[in-house]
Image (cartoon, rainbow, N blue to C red; front, side):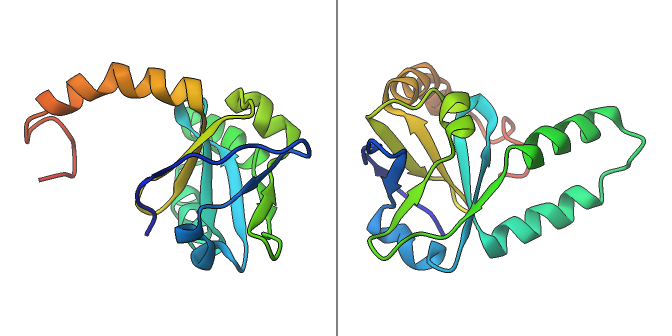
Length: 143
């Protein structure tokens, strides 16, 4: 499970040092892909298989499902961290998420997310008030 907020930097080769708390779960491989709100989703290889299984159950006749799956999978990159826990973020994903040197990596339960630090701070400022005001009827699946 991925929890917490971490502040790594992107090096000159487009690599990030994974947070120490995440390394064990990601050590045998991970998948990076485009996430909503222009962040990068980070899945363990095992969790990505579960997500892929769910996607394959989407009806082929549904255009929104086809579009989503195309974007999600065409941007995906499977990676293996090196011995120092570094992983390269492909240039296309860095551009999609607008990643500069300062990053934020957050735990989001079954996945981690990589954000440009400025984008994350703006997102957080805009969403924290709504989070505080959310009632039990506001989020599907959460009781």
